[in-house]
Length: 240
Ligand SMILES: C[S@@+](CC[C@H](N)C(=O)[O-])C[C@H]1O[C@@H](n2cnc3c(N)ncnc32)[C@H](O)[C@@H]1O
Image (cartoon, rainbow, N blue to C red; front, side, top):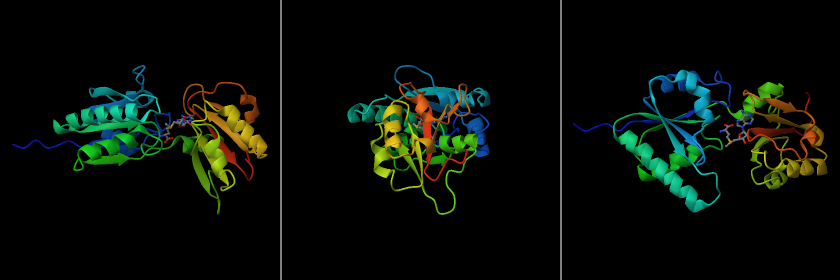
């Protein structure tokens, strides 16, 4: 008998509050026997796993280490190794899920894993279940629209400082700046230069212990921010 290859589910578990997970994600998680969660190479902690741990019973949970580096060869090696491990489980006939924070196709390790798995085996069945993004949860927390009427909004990475912000700041009405934690001072300087420091708000650890909203982001100058931090900029006024 030919063994059927399992399906891989890429599941977004939402940004932190365990209740911000979709019904579909929950249903799939409850029936999938093998759950993969990404971790750093330095420890085995997974926030995604923490978010859904109360929903998981009697399933196999496996960490996949992804290095926090920009070195392409080191990254490729990790993606290849992790993709091969996932394929090993799928070809044994088992379904598997890869859980990710927020949405799995928004600044997520799942994007790389998906590409690598498809590269190794284009026929493998993958279903992606979207998740509530961190910035939609943050907008709900501060009760302000992401965009209205004819406005645009851009989601930008602050991982390399304010460079990307400077690229787009004159082009859009609203900006969501993710991964701001290492570069708050650079971002703040750019916003002050543009006269936009008062139109920005910082949200950290939305839906998690230590959740913080800082309305005057000048208060963040020279202070370290948690990894889970973002800045929302409303050029036409915060309105909150
Ligand atoms: C690798 S990205 C993950 C984005 C995620 N896939 C999403 O859909 O929102 C990590 C960044 O998302 C933001 N983030 C994720 N969860 C968050 C939370 N609970 N509170 C604040 N920011 C969060 C932070 O900017 C963090 O540096």
